[in-house]
Length: 174
Image (tube, rainbow, N blue to C red):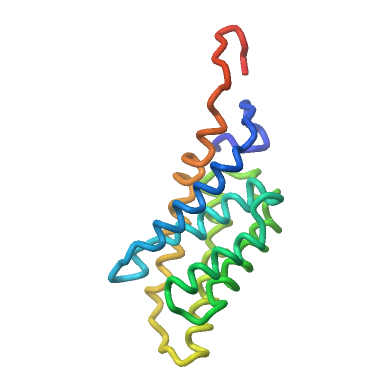
């Protein structure tokens, strides 16, 4: 069993708010990349939103999720509120479980994150179907599985700046 937040020997530096904003905007730009098959492209924005909702629930919350969801609705020309509702519910439930998830290893955290991503994607599919779209098939939910599989890598990348020491001192153990 790997190290987790509960028994980790390292002390993390505070998160730079500009880094959080930058990571969310980069994730949003990655979501803008056009792909022939949507299920081949993970939802980077949902992944980064969940990460910051779990790590910094007081800084990145439901309001930020709604704003990014509204931007995604405008970008994808979908029913206004489709992504906003999905990302809002995703953030709410991520904040709800944020203390519990941090006790587990990154792979177990991904197992906790997968149902949240699947539920958010199900909300968007149901809303599309309510407005007349056909059911795209079960393969569409592979996006949630692919997104959850990227959780350990996302966690490694987004925590890395917090692990850098301010002043390197060979005599200091931290």
